[in-house]
Length: 167
Image: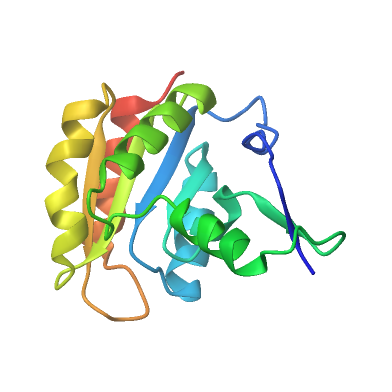
């Protein structure tokens, strides 16, 4: 017995006044070790991820389900919830671009890190449309399947942060 609970997008995390760069993270699934290292690195340079739209985290951006009263058609509710997940793999995939663009404006994002695996053509193909729709810098980073980012990847992120930082 479930029912859909309509919610507005949750406000982003509280932002420390020392944050100089507000980032969005988008792309394929990121191993926990890479995400931890990236978060520590960003914090060191005064940046914070305010919008995480990686495949690890997409389900936080859709309406919640409530285990309370039933509407009598749980399958329809679950299907509706599933079809509301903005995703790069859906066709047409305009919903992910519109939804993400709106959230970037709401959160006042300064730059986007698009992290993808070399073999993931969907995110690579989506990059052009994201660049077209957003008026902020996007850094594309390729993962090779390992459990750590390379030194050159960290250098690229550092240069990106220097470019977009406020102060």
